[in-house]
Image (cartoon, rainbow, N blue to C red; front, side):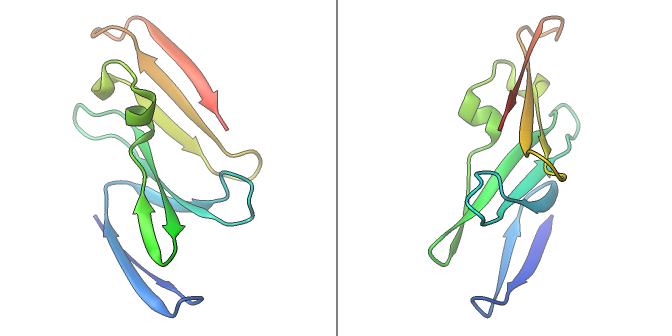
Length: 109
């Protein structure tokens, strides 16, 4: 999917390609919104989250949350962002075996 947006503070258009549902949220409490992209899952790949942030005038994309946490059975594990009002969190559920019988969950803020 391609996304285009206009940043009035820089008077520029920006574009990026990524699968998911992007939204703005101040994840780190510094007063500036980060762009959080929730990949909702497709085929055999469960949900994951990427975070975009400004570094100077460049929009920088993070590794996916599941990649950073090195969750086992990457395709069977999920990361879901809660960016609605209130504390912003990312819930991760890691499949500990290939049958997804054993899982571990954690919530990150």
